[in-house]
Length: 104
Image 1 (cartoon, rainbow, N blue to C red):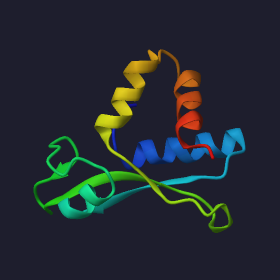
Image 2: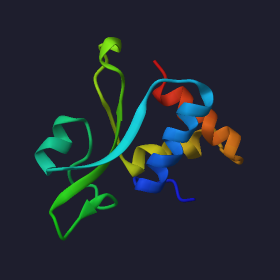
Image 3: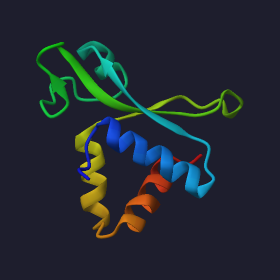
C-alpha cells in the first residue's frame, strides 16, 4: 500500500479506527485551491493536484458531532512526512501512527 491520499488509504484508516475502538472516519475530498489553503494545505502542491478537475485531493478526518471537533485535512506530503519522521517499518507501526495522529 502506498502512503498517499486515496480511497484505499482512507479505507485502511477507517479499518484502523474500528480495530482500535476509536471514533473517527476518513474519506477523500476534492477541494478548490482556495479551500485547500483555507484548510491549511498547500494549494500549489502538485502531488495531490488533479489537472483534469483543477482540484486538490485531501484526506478528510471527521469526528462525531458530540465531540465538537473540526475536521482534519491531510495531504500526501504531510502523511509521508510523519511516516518518515517516525521511521515506520511495519503495518502495526503504521496503525499506531494513524491512531496517534487522529485520535481525540
